[in-house]
Amino acid sequence: MTDLSTLWAVGLPLAGAGAGGGLGYAKVRAPRVFWAVAGLPVARVRFAVTYRATMDVCGLTVQPSRLRAFLIRNVARRSDVQPVPPKVRRVRGSSTGMRVTLRLPAGLEPADVVAASERLRHAWGVHSITVFETKPGFVELRMTGYDVLRRVKMPRKLPSGPMTVTVALREDGTAFVRDYLKVPHALTLGANQSGKSMYQRNLVAGLARLRVALVGIDCKRGVEQRGYAPRLSALAMTPETASGLLDALVGEMEDRFDLLSDYGAADVWALPEDVRPVPIVVLVDEVAELFLVASKKEEDRRDRMVMQMIRLGQMARAAGMYLEICGQRFGSDLGKGATTLRAQLTGRVVHRVNDKQTADMGLGDIAPDAVMAVTAIPPDLPGVAVAGDSSGGWSRIRTPELSAAKAAAVCAEYAYLTPALPALASYRPAVSASAWSAGSAPLAKPTPATP
Image 1 (spheres, rainbow, N blue to C red):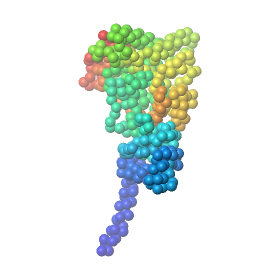
Image 2 (cartoon, one colour):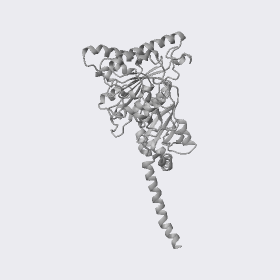
Image 3 (cartoon, rainbow, N blue to C red):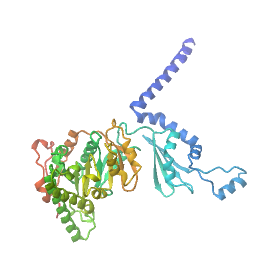
Image 4 (cartoon, one colour):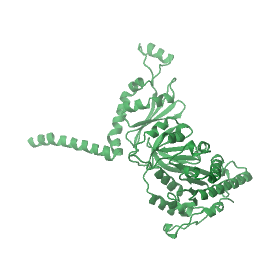
């Protein structure tokens, strides 16, 4: 009996200490496990117990209708009529947080919930709360129990589509995708060591797996994009070559419009599959190099390049041609046409920048409140960015780590998907035999740009 009591007195605290230490270790090293074991049950209980009081103090309650007040006073025989919070329709747990669907009472709108999201986050002890309007009168609170951007782990189920690429992870635990059919053109900005190159690598690696033509413009002598050469249908590494390549792209666009006119189609996706030209994604690595000139005689070339890019931004979507423009800095002082070009770029992704003007140019015209989020990105979290679009919505994202060698290896692996575009044949980069991965052959089945 003495031995049993001693075991009980000593073993139980040790087991508790071991369990506590295990949870503490999991909270730091395996946050998903900690959230599933301890975080989610505690959060659900806290939410259920404090929901009505939290909504009341956060100003998310309204006075009940006259009928409800009459029933409370005369049927329930209660003299006090309490304010009404949003009705909880559904509560779901996930590997990263919790999702709650609310039915808003008359008198509340989604903007009211968005304004109170920071107070709700602190009241329920979660890392972040993002509010989405699912349909009129309903909102979904997407809560994350920990910082999912600290250590990026992509969800298992990823969106798919003919022109869809998963690029990063959102702060609510969902995937951030580039869907070119919904957002045809985009602008990506970021200072040195901000993670902008990592974003481009993930984008290129995703595009390399699709049946699209990739066209690179890298006026830094191809430092960033030369490794993607096996998967590129064209590559320009100097401003002079870029000017000719942009002219060729505009000519290709005009040929495709002739094809659309012949078939009476609004865009290339309305054409029969056997005559549909392959989509083209134009990747501009450092857009400032196309604007800057060293002498007066180069201004005409600069103006022509900017004009051609603006034309592509205005009309190329219907022709199945899409722009991905990147740069360290972007401002109206780059020269004539900078703001006009920006207006054509619907998608915006801004990493840490060196000046507020670049953040304003990237997001100030579509989501002014996102500019402060950009300036708050710490330098010790490369890859973190703020993504927005013309709808005014924005969110923090982070790209998973991908080395330049791995991105180049993906391009070599899928080099057989590189289509032959006759209009851009003179700009096709030379690729050495060692660049082809085992078992792949260049241009196994070329896809014509025109029938």
